[in-house]
Length: 259
Image 1 (cartoon, one colour):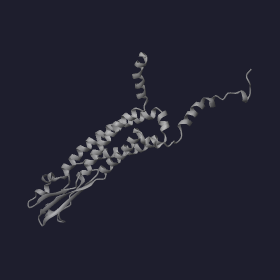
Image 2: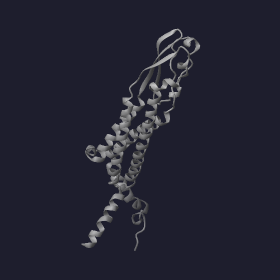
Image 3: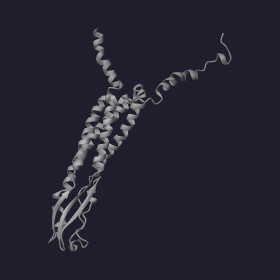
Image 4: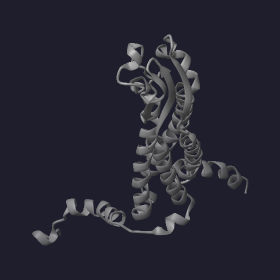
C-alpha cells in the first residue's frame, strides 16, 4: 500500500537534476595547475603569446624618415625629410619644403607614393587578437583544465580557432612581406626620378638616407615563426579532441578482431 503525505511523495524535479548538478559541481570552480606549462600544449601557447607581442611591436611601433639633399634657387644643400610610420599611408606623407619661399615658387608639394595600411593593419590586428586569445587560452589551460578535458566542445573549438589562426598567420605574413618590399621601393633613392619639383630648372635632388627597416624585416620573421608555431599547435590541440580518440579506436579495432 502506497504511503500518503509528504513522506511518501517523490520529488522528481530534484531527483532529475541531481546527476546534472553533480556534473556541474565537478566541473565548476577554479583549479590552478601550473604544470600545464611543462606540457607541450601549455608551453607552445606561451611561445605563441610572446611571439605575437614581438610581431605586434616590431611592425606597429616602427617610425622612420627619408632624407633628400636639395639645391635650388636661393638654397644650397638643404635637407628635406618625409617622416613615415605605421600604418604606412605613404601617400599622405609630405616632404618638408627646402625654404619658406619654396625655391622661389618652383618647389611644389611632394608626397611619397603608396598606401600600405591595409596590409600592415591586417598583420598588426591579427597579432593583437592572437595575443588576447593566447591569454584567454592560458587561463583555461591553467585554471580550468578539468573543464577543458571533460567538455568535448572546448577542444574542438580550440582546434578550429587554431587552424584559422595558422592560416591567417601565413596569409598576413606574405601580404605584409610584399607590402614591406613596396615600402622600401617607395622610400629609397629610386623615388627621386618621380619627384616633379626636382626636375625644375636649377634644382638638383640627391638621396641622403632612409631609416633602417631591419626591425620591419624582423616582423616578417616573427610572422613566419608564428605560422610555424600555430601549425604545430593544431596537432597538439587535435590530440585532445574526440576526433583523435575515435581515429585511434578505429585504427586499433582490426588488431583486436584478429586477436
